[in-house]
Image 1 (tube, rainbow, N blue to C red):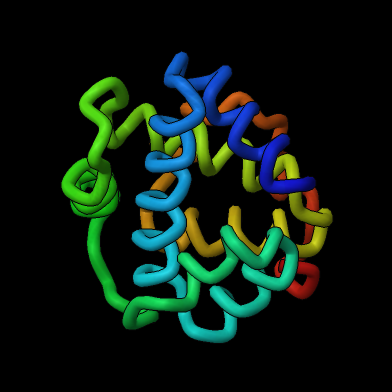
Image 2: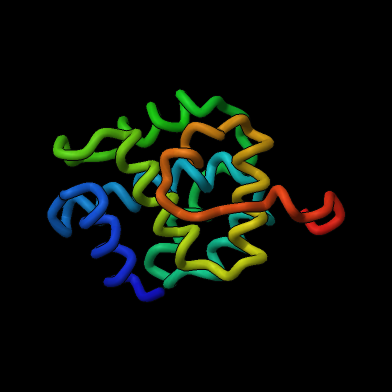
Length: 138
């Protein structure tokens, strides 16, 4: 998915203008990059347009923090006041999951489940079912 399509989709989901959607996308990607391992961030970044992928890989990867801390970090990073951290996180995550290939989508979902981020996953409107895969496929 191209950058413009990602921003437009985030804008639709958050009801923010393009600047707000761009800001929300950046904030979520930066925070996601801190939570994923370096390899995971690099793999996901390879699926995104370069001007978005750089946000995944610019921070210190592999930090451990809760779902609440994830949302709080997103909220703190956003310059727009029109979108909450939780709304930004779910909108951007849903858009990312729709824009990457199935293998990368499954890897991100698996990681979020391991992190205890089921609430964020559940609030996305993406149809994700990894329960039928064997542990070897995960």
